[in-house]
Image (spheres, rainbow, N blue to C red):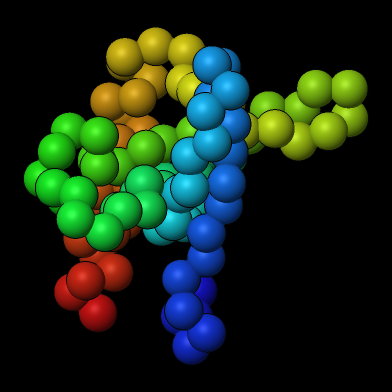
Length: 95
């Protein structure tokens, strides 16, 4: 993905109605499922080392023919996909 025009941002709404701005990092396919990684957009003056600013991984699900982003179903799924993203991002840095 080219960053010629800058990063991509997406606004999502959580279960409590809070809007969260996410910066797109990467997408991967695993076991027939599409996963997308994001970082939360860091507000000016916020502490980027805060746990709230870590990598967020969501998966694409289809509900009534519409693609939606959803949280992962288990800690095991999250751990497995996180490792895949870490490998992919590390490989990208080496190039």
